[in-house]
Image (cartoon, rainbow, N blue to C red; front, side, top):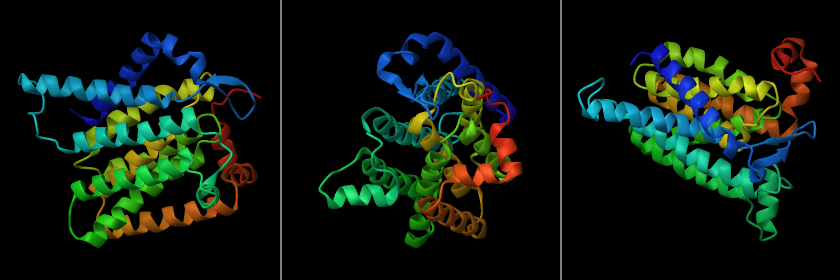
Length: 278
């Protein structure tokens, strides 16, 4: 399967799932208010996760019957699917059960100091555990490298959450960041393309404020891009990406990305591109 075909499969799968699961999407239990206080269904990233599951199940079934890749020929498919389901589950728990009162690493640590365990803290700890499993399976070189790669994946997932503060923002930046990764991708190219295609299929509805990805989606998109870097970028490149992610996550603790974007004309133009008029 080529990257373009994988993109198309992810896109079509999520559009069909949205059509068939409209009643689920608009269930009252999923309704939350967005940044403009409009009631919208959240956790729509769940449909991207399900789309990836459907595509990978179809590919696996066809492979068993001799069509396409042989079973086990592409182990990265399982890693990408594991990342989608694992980070999606953690994000969904935060979307559904989180209060939103404690934000950022410091907020969750303050809650822990007060003997409260927040869903955000569970997401951080669980995300770190999933990232470590992924990094240890991707390309074992040394314990230090696995630890560094796990931190990269976890911080990429968290950056996705930090960017998801306006309609379409995290998907647009995800698509931009995916392009250079796709250019160097070899092993994970097709598997990750299915995920990108699924999120691209949600972009129009996200921009027009018909749904919100929630942490369910932002968590997954960031984690999968981080996993793609770990799998297909050399050690030096991974170190550069890791340093950038550490810096961005630390900056987010001190200032709002939304304010930076609004004060920077090119970023503001890109951020508002395709968005419904306010």
